[in-house]
Image 1: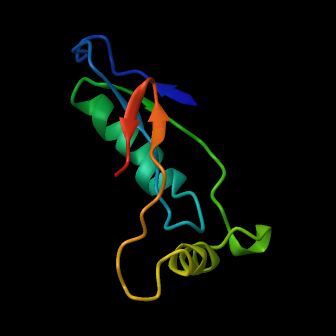
Image 2 (image 1 turned 180 degrees about the vertical axis):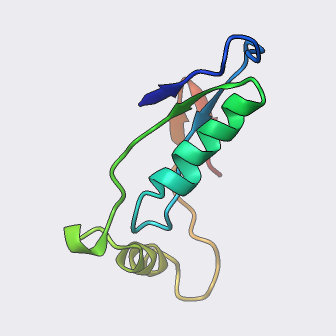
Amino acid sequence: MHVYLPPKEKANGGAVLVCPGGGFSILAWDLEGTEVAEWLNSIGFAAIVVKYLAPTAHHGNNLTSKARTAEDRRPRDGRAACHEPHALEGRRMGP
């Protein structure tokens, strides 16, 4: 994480967490990270830019194989698959 603070005379007390995109192949650090942080600073917001690893086909984590796997889990008659409910903080999720 990188923290970008606005000038004291412009600071409004707000902060924004910035997670740059990149289409599952790169991390658009400059265009969607630092440039956004600089703009947020110019209007008084602090910006926290998150740097993370983007999945790539080179590392065996491509989106096509994930989509194919999800497609294989659907019933052949086209109905939506019914899965067991999952628990999240004691609440019930799912069908």
